Length: 261
Image 1 (cartoon, rainbow, N blue to C red):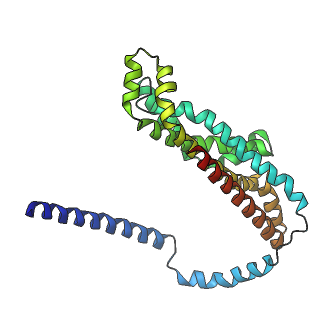
Image 2 (tube, rainbow, N blue to C red):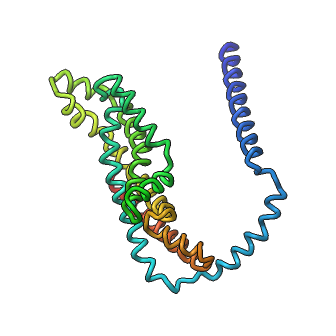
Image 3 (cartoon, rainbow, N blue to C red):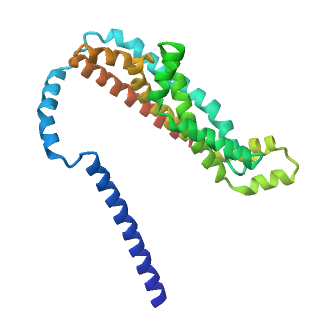
């Protein structure tokens, strides 16, 4: 009994030590970034109040000209998600230890996934705008490449943790690698993959609005134009439109997840 109590006490001390270390790191990071500089907050409050007064009331006079950019933003999110799935699933199968054909292939696939994930979509958006011009296409490519790094990682983790017994049974029955994947792996992870995909689509809509700021089309382009002209009442109206669309997209995603359970 004393041994168990001593072990429990050691675990608690270890947990407290780790928690204290994480808290210290968080406080240090906040201090480095100036979070505890009260004077900066005090100096910024008047500017925020002035900006808020210029945004109220929102000006919806040009709402008809925002319908097409909002539709373009939605199309970018759907197209980006579709392209992400197309790229992520093969990479995930190559990056999972139980489906990769060779350890070197596994490492190469994980390196590619990490490379995609390491570049933010806003940087990719700037690169693709320079490469293929303005419009929705660079936004779709930027979303797909960055999200492939995220989604493929989540897919691979889901595949890695499947029940190995169906895989062993299919292999023992003489099934090919493709048959093992299609009959023993994918049926186990499809609900998880669908859940991940829907969450990513919801994220893509919000990211699409931001990518418009760098010239990738959509409502973000209209938002940047209003900011440049210092029309903060229009900025407020556009942000409210984006908020309404985000709520609709989130509602659709939640409904899809319920249907797929």
